[in-house]
Image 1 (cartoon, rainbow, N blue to C red):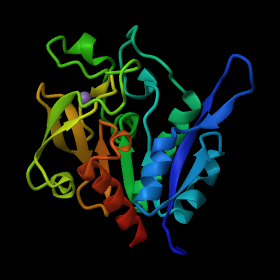
Image 2: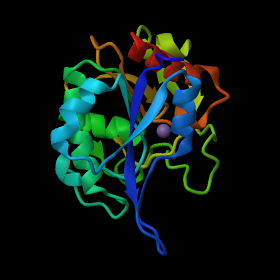
Image 3: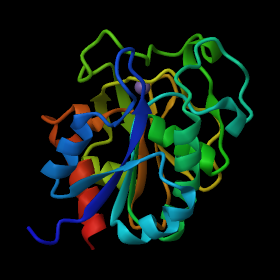
Image 4: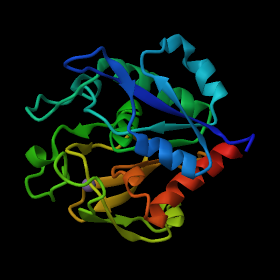
Length: 240
Ligand code: MN
């Protein structure tokens, strides 16, 4: 297939006790993009920010993947003992990348941390820790000692949204591997899905070719056709 769209995913720095650092991304993202007909290409978050405009021009779509917490300083968050795995390099890379991707109207699929960093990049804020801020909320942090495809709670999708159209349903069960969530949505974002407890589970940018963020992990649900349609519609938009 000579014209598979080039889909950029961001590889982030991992340190190890007994070997030199590596740049990584979980394989499930690569498999999901390949299955959907795209060519996943890894961009290390260490690339110079000055190269971003050229990279944005040369890729057909961008995935913002899961990962550690966005630094509180980017959204005026308050210190919380459960905030962890902040990666200054990745924050800087993604916060610089997002406005360029949206300005160029390149398709964007944001997953878990991705939806959080998207919201922060556009001026929104986060709950530093759902359980601390919303004691009555459901449990959303079904990690690390659970199967990543464990369907933890129900999500209701807004009728008429692009997401509802893609998923083909207004109510579904999702996995849930996050301890943070959107607090104040950025003005540009439309909230299009909630968990039963009111936690925001998905957003869209109206008017874009494809700009959707989900708080769950569709790449860990390869056997769920609705989840795979998210990737196939994203790759399709990247191909147009
Ligand atoms: Mn959740």
